[in-house]
Image 1 (cartoon, rainbow, N blue to C red):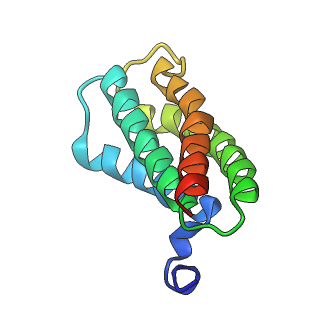
Image 2: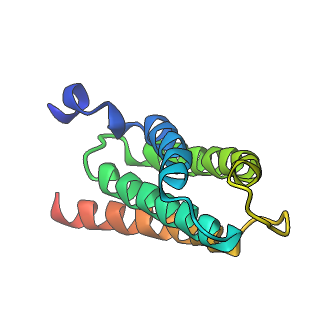
Image 3: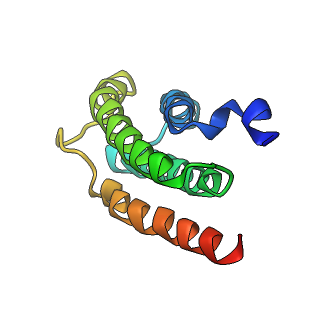
Length: 125
């Protein structure tokens, strides 16, 4: 498939890496006024990661491998954000409660989205 040669972003690990690097950069550019706003922006970026991840499943030839690989990289992504966000909040001088945002609960929808893409692909292909 031609997509394998063109898009390195097809791999969930590369997707996670790109979005994990994009999150702090965007937060430094936007400079949110509160820690809650910073966590919300980070959650929106994570939702974009999950959306791209689900879309790229359509082009993968081994969907179950991609499914479990995606779940693993999502956990790694959340871990990276959990480590980097407190440091970023300190750099931006934002007061926070030192707790992770509940906005990252959207991770529970990832398996559903991936399974929906797999089911749709199975029906149409």
